[in-house]
Image 1: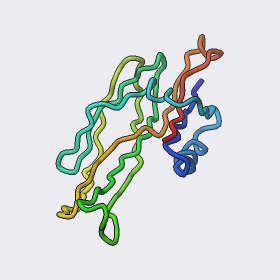
Image 2: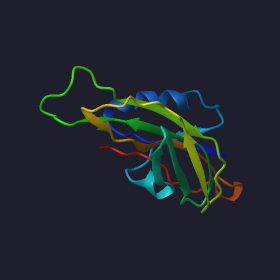
Image 3: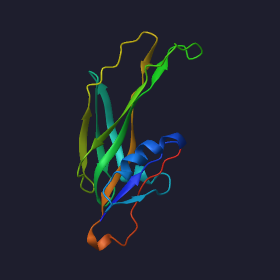
Image 4: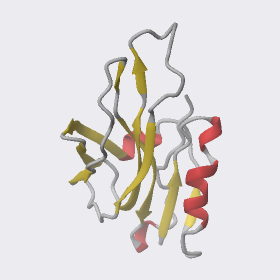
Length: 154
């Protein structure tokens, strides 16, 4: 059995990732579970940005196989003078997926890009990678057991 987990980053960001899960096959169940559970199941490590490419590693901390890990690659622009910002922010974000599978207690590397961010003298980009959701495959012996999942509120 496959169960998809949705991570809520903040109130306004639920609709976008939720639409991805609604398009998932009907055999999957969608589960939203208490805050912090996503961090216990999937850990994002070693995020780096070099030559407009974002790299890092996903670590499966759960006892189940994970797949379809959805990530938000966020490039917020931080103005040098926050009191007098420019007219329009060059901030960007994209949703990326690491298909997997990721076996329990194993990791996979990811690489996204290159995404050409404009060179600016009035600030800098502070790239972040956040977990949006994932699919967990439960073994037949564990189908009746409760799985860990994800909801994060900021």
